[in-house]
Image (cartoon, rainbow over all chains, first blue to last red; front, side, top):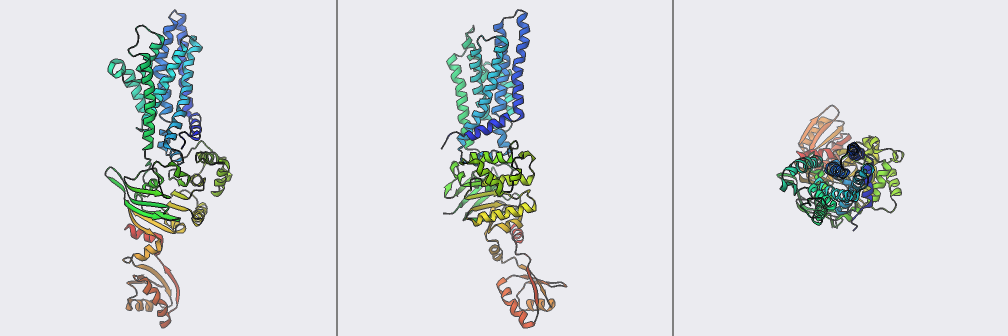
Length: 241
Length: 302
């Protein structure tokens, strides 16, 4: 039994690319570049380029663009099919549910990684290339963690987009900034720690580089495993008769 | 080995029982699944298709369990009731995509064949979003036929089709049944089920009410008399004789004939020719008014 379906990958990429969702993602990517143009003005007014670059990456790219693009793609890739019941055409095929999970997840991740990488690479265009590999690695690992996390939750709750934004704004954005224990339960905290460790900031981050990377990858792998487990036990009642 | 084997299957959601302790075994042919709205038809079909798991009991298709057995879908076709499809595709692309997922060696020719079967070849390059409801219905049926399955599970396959298409689809389903396939089809339209199914399953409130040939089911309902309309030369005399000889339990005279209620069909049909010969009454027409699926359905539901 194969553990992957190229057919589902192709179908999912077409679903993602052929719909309005891609326009929104492209808009967000452009949005990530816009503050950099504003930053150029600040550079000419004498601010440190390094600080501006970090501020933009932390506040805009890592704090908003990466989690939102990951949310929009990975939370809807399978949930929408469940809601519209087109998932029947996947479930009722000689394809294991594990293969459906992996194919759907990888389609969402592929597009999310491309667009998130583009939003990070926007830093090169506007603010030169120093430390860009650090931002790129952090951005891609954060994409895997956020994407897998939202993918799993999309199989657990109906309104995952709303839930995802609440997590992002309320938990990571507000509560995580106020409470240290709460921040320990956020993806952003470990992604930020990873970035600080790679840049060698002073003071050093609370969490060592290896621990941040392991935590983010564990979140990604665990979420994917749980998503596979959830789909393998899922029922599709749809409308009643 | 039965094609479909359902043993003591129940399905409940919390306190709500959707299907209650149903058992049956089915052999090849066309089997109609009937029941009023909310009877549990779709729940039963979805359990057979593996979209729902039984809370209790066991389902085997073609001798195999369904749960965790995705390879069984190489032999099963399912036409779901919901209208949802990949609307951004053309009809042809949709079928090719499904044939690819079905892992067929030549998805294009499988799609072409299926389009021909459901008479959608002329519309194959149209986007599904521009399809009429009847066309969408035929496309759904086509995707279930792509891999020439041994067992077809069809949930309301004729919904939305126009009368000509309905006739064609009924003929197609009958032909598939005659070719040795097993087709389990649910429908609200009793007339259509009567035309295509050789066997029926009635369910009501999640329980199996009757299973088998509907004429045989009708015959077994002794407490429900048959209504027979007789157009004869002397209705009054015939009504009187039938009542006198206790061959009927009720009569209703009209200007053209007499409608009788028959409790013991064998005695009635056995004695009627003899009675007509003895008395010289000419029988011009004899029509069974309730020996159809709809009557059986209503009796069983009541």
